[in-house]
Every structure is written in C-alpha cells, then in structure tokens.
Length: 284
Image: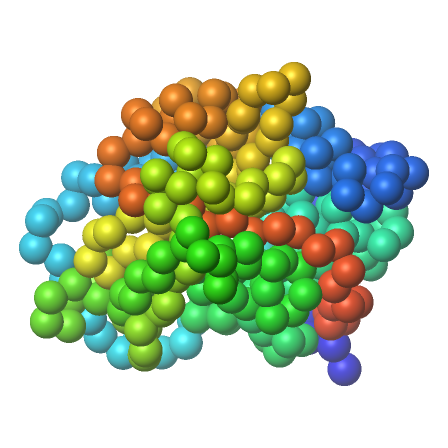
C-alpha cells in the first residue's frame, strides 16, 4: 500500500497541468528554460524570509547538537505563487520531468522525489535533502542531474561536515537540521574558472554558490542561461522579493563569501518516481 502524503492545498493544480501540457510539446532540452521563465515575477516565500531573518538575529553561540526523534512531515507545502531559491529549482524540475499533465498522479510524486530521498517510505524531515550538495548527490543518483564539475580539470574539491560547527555544535539551530554523519565532498568550479569561462556552463544548468563556511556548503542556487550574448542568473531573490533574471557575472562579483559554483545539468530521463497516496489536508 502506498504511503500517504498530505498536501496543504491543490490551488496550483490547473496552472501546473497547463504548464506541463505546454512543456510536453517542446523538446526535453527546452523545457527547463520554458518553465523557469513562466514563473518569473512570482514572489519569494515569506516563511523562508522570516527564517533567514531569525537565523541572522540568532546568538553567535550555536546550540549544542542533539539526537532528536525522527519528525514526520505532517503536511507538505507546495506553491507556484511563493518560491525560495531551492523550491524554485525543485518545482521547475518536477514540472519539466512530469511525463503527463496530471497534478496528483504525475507532478506531485515527481516533486516529492526531487525534494526527498524517501523511496516511497513515509516522509520524514530527516529524509528531506536540505543541504544543496547532498540534494545534488541524491538527484544525480536518481538520474535527474549530472554534476559537471566531478572529474573536470578546472574543478576543485571541498570536504565539509554539513551543519557541524566546532565541537558538536550546529550551524543551523532548527530541529530539522542535524549534523551529518560523514564529510560531504563538494565538486565545484572556482570563481576564476567561471569568470574565465573555463567552466563549461550551458543554458538550463542548475548552479549553486559554494561557500567556505564551517558546516555549510552553499549560499544560494538558481539556473544559468545565456540569452543574446548575455550570461544570466535566473533565481528567487530574497533581497528583491521575487523570481528574476540578473546579470550572472555581476551577481557573483557582488555576492560575498562565494568561492565557486556547483554546476548540475538536468538529464530529463529519470525513472518514474515511487507512488504515494496523496490527500488534500481538509479531506477526512
């Protein structure tokens, strides 16, 4: 029997099905560009802005890590109206990978598969791929992405224990973030390779801004595009409070703490995701 997932609302059902119907008429390599552009102008997720503000206001001394009981995902939120940097990428990929224009039977299972490493099991918070480098590894294993920096001569490697700061303290203090059990290996292109165009970027690539902070891998993520000779970052901007195209090189030069980029190329050939029994949260 498929595990149950409770969705907050089905408000996006008709729009999602229209987008998928239109995208299926295009070659697979054009779908990410088409879908990500449709969503431009949507608002940044208010809850994420509040969480970031709270994190910045938190005391410098982080809490001690603790082993907490696994927390179930009681209600999964999904929205095409409000998106942050990670959920923007995830929703675009889920729409682009949907094999038919059915919200419940195609899009939502695909979205869950991109967001979680659950394999059909009940959704738990610790199965959510919170950290981008881990998210990338999971979705490369599933067949959604190819890590272009892995093995490339212009790339570098960084190893970090995700969420661990100093002696058993956490970078993030929310209970959904726990210290990793092993170091995370990050393959990335240093900024000099990106600016010199030694990094083989292609329109539609998912890019993630790698940092050198203790316990943290990535500061931001979005899509890379080239249009009429210009390099663009298409992303959910918390500063501008919307999904927007910005000058790629200028953004990287202005963003403090970035040492390079992960480059993840959508493959659009992933297997059919596991089945779930999906319910509206008001359904008894």
